[in-house]
Amino acid sequence: MVSQSAARFRMNKATAITLLVILAVATILRFDFLFSTSHKVSHDTIHYDAMVRQLLDEGVYAYKSTTSNAQVTPGYPLFMAAIYKLAEGLSYEPFPIIRVLQVGFSLVSIALGYLIAARLAGRQAGLLTAATMAVYPPFIWANGAILTEPLAAMLLLLYVWLQLLAFEQKRWTLHALAGAAMGLTVLVRPEFLVLIGASYVLLLIRGRQLLETAKLFLFALIGAGLVLSPWVIRNVVTLGEVVVASTQVNPFAAGTYPDKNYDDGLVDRKGKTQMEVAKERLRIGFTEHTWTYVKWYTIGKLKYTYGRMFFGSGHSPLYPVIPLRQPVHLVIVFSGTLAALLMLRRWRQPAMLLVVLLGTISLTRLAFVPEFRYNFTAMPLLIMLGSMLAVGLWQRFKPTRDNGRSANTSTEEGAAHA
Image (cartoon, rainbow, N blue to C red; front, side):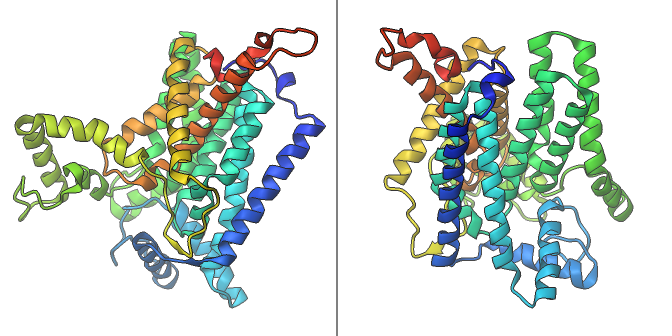
């Protein structure tokens, strides 16, 4: 996975036409899905709806409460609130408008997937990434759900794109912009805050320049801080405490129940907070049921997270998109994982950023309750890595052509070089 130069990345006419065709197909599939099926509303969507209506009617920002709190970050609720006001002015229901806008987020994500993969491994890898993202069923189904996934995925890919440019060019403005993109991502999904630190640890290890890395990291933190500052200030003023991300404990506490057996009776929960119960469960679990908890906090949660694709909030009739959906999902997971492992042999390559981010996301997920929904934002990274591997293998082993020219002469554009 070798990033050569901007020259190899530039889009020629054939590539541009192919990408436009991919985006056109992606658009048709997404709108056909939206308007040909009946969309269900999830438990989380019901609470988001109540939260937004309370915010607009009473000016109280609170999730599952009538008293101000910081249980969820404001990115998606404020986006919903803006659409609710727009829909009110148009005398229209807000959910259909949100779904249409989420199609836009999905299409931008495909374009960003192309840009990232093409810069790292060439146009073929970029096009394969875009084509896979265009037809991967969850990237279509999620647009019908009133959930954070489409917006979070787009912002995370924007961060990856800007961070790659920043690492390549080392301009402070790019590092600040990457930080700002991460700030926006955190406002939608707070668990991604750790990714910015992981990125600069990689830069430090790769370049071994402590002062230079610290300076660039500072610019990134300034960018993120400027975006997050209104939320932090609100929490200090309203709640009297510094909250950078969110205060929700339930995902962490629920993650302490192996195989999601919430009635295992391991700890008496009466009169205790969720955090107190969670800490006690971890202490007893890892000391008295060590193997069960070790397995749950490694293989068990990874299987729950990546074992199946995300179906959105549900819809009927089923919009199949492609045949063999589950095998395709598993091929993406395993090929992306294999590409990540191969990349460890050449860890100084720019594409190592994808591996570090994927690894950090997966490790972070181990702390919380696992859901198939939580693989959604990691899947673009796995698709990009798998596409690089596929293109690299094709370039290495394709039949010899062009007057006996060796098929191995163009291996630098793919993951087989990892």
